[in-house]
Amino acid sequence: MTKGILLYAFNNEVTDYEAIAEWSVKRIKKYLGLPATIITDRKAIAEFGGSRIMHPTQNRELATWFNAGRYHAWEHSPYDQTIILDADYIVSSDLLLRLFDSPLEFACHQSVLDVTGRNNFHSHNFFGRHKFPQTWATVCYFKKNNFTRDIFDFVKMIKENYSHYSRLYNFNRKPFRNDYAFSIALSVLQGHRISNKHKIPWNLPTASTDVEISINKDTITLEYNKHATPKRLKLKGQDLHLLNKISLEKAIESA
Image 1 (tube, rainbow, N blue to C red):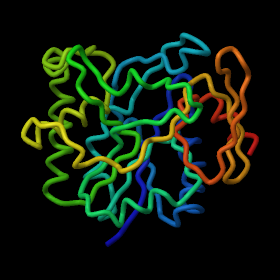
Image 2 (tube, one colour):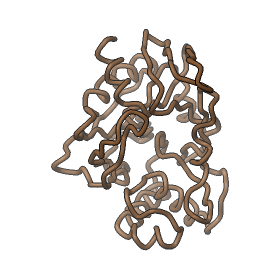
Image 3 (spheres, rainbow, N blue to C red):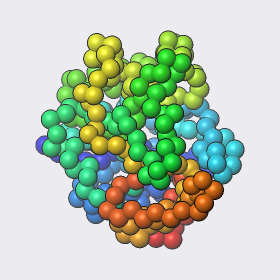
Image 4 (cartoon, rainbow, N blue to C red):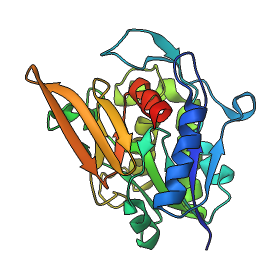
């Protein structure tokens, strides 16, 4: 069976996602030994997902967010087994290879780890007034079969009827969130039940928008404040989902 990584990269007013994705592909080949496909033809398949403040701790600039068409991944992927990665996920290990050997047909993260120890993401464990458990679409693994096609088709239906689902689950209608759509789709397709059946069996390592980084091969140095005290942390051989795209672009330029 063919295996590979799929990335979506649509530039906006503040972030060069294409450059980040191209840099990510080099690390994917180095640490995972896998081919990678970048979907970047914005005119053809990018979908408007609303305007978002991408870096709330650095500026309040609204940016257009185009990555609302992730449900296309089943048809876009040229592989039998695929991992969809956000472009801002930094691969520094072979950890993701474990997903290809798992018995799961579809898997994504259902828990996140703040690597700085500040618990900045506790509010993201749930969404909406009813506190529905959130699935993270940052990393999604799937095998191509009828069941996983149903998942992506259901996410598409949610995207096309997002206002209805926002009222049903009591969350903000804008911007569109892939995380919410996949959370709802997985629950409904399991008989409106919440389970860990499709959970990636480790936490998603993440750093917030106020964290500055530098990268040297498989070592990521993070600088941030904790309780008003400057801190520095080094991660060696560990993947990282970095929300600070500004710092990531700077790190790529100096790497």
